Picture (tube, rainbow, N blue to C red):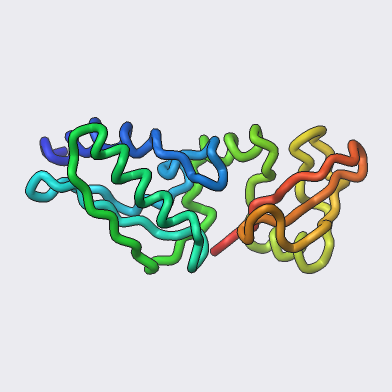
Length: 166
């Protein structure tokens, strides 16, 4: 590892890990996997981010929040949006998946299970309140486009499910 790589890992990642996803504040942008790269070039931090959904309204806020966090740490920065490769829920870290569950949002299933749940009504999404799999889809869209609304038929509590994207 070069000194520059070590600097990025030791300095930039802790700063960026403090920036929350504005739609899911318990998740950092690092745990969401939207940061594709962060490098220091000529004393400017250059960051590439990928939206979770094309046209995601949170990306402008995320970019501004990253710039502010880096400015507060003494860095100038540039944030660039990249669309390829497209973001996938596979990029959510295990810590991020657990944070989703703890916050009351069911983490995404794999692509095949996700289709079975959203299109065929299979009961595979586990309730974030009581742990039951006796859940049902209420709406294809929850509080944001990336989530679906579910309800548990055991505890009767509603909750969001983060849809799988591949």
